[in-house]
Length: 104
Image 1 (cartoon, rainbow, N blue to C red):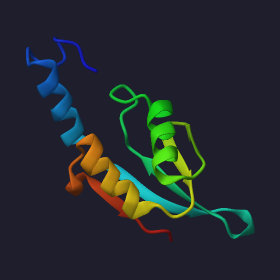
Image 2 (tube, rainbow, N blue to C red; image 1 turned 90 degrees about the horizontal axis):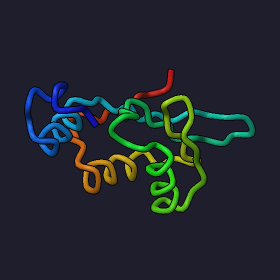
Image 3 (cartoon, helix red, strand yellow; image 1 turned 180 degrees about the vertical axis):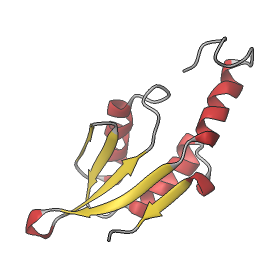
């Protein structure tokens, strides 16, 4: 979370809400070997969220394996719509800031 100087004197709760609203989160599906698919989430600020705790929560909620590495979250299987719903309902991200990236 940002310090008082970085928040221009705003209360920490308001500063956190501004950070959530300004982030653009990308959710995409990657195909791996043997026909497996992985849902990848990018763009979540590592300073605002502990990605390891977040991925642990998501793995439990989605009943799937996953990991957090290189600033991105990887969840086994196709969980794009469920992930968007969880990020909006439980973590306060704006639906307009979550985009699905189609694979080329």
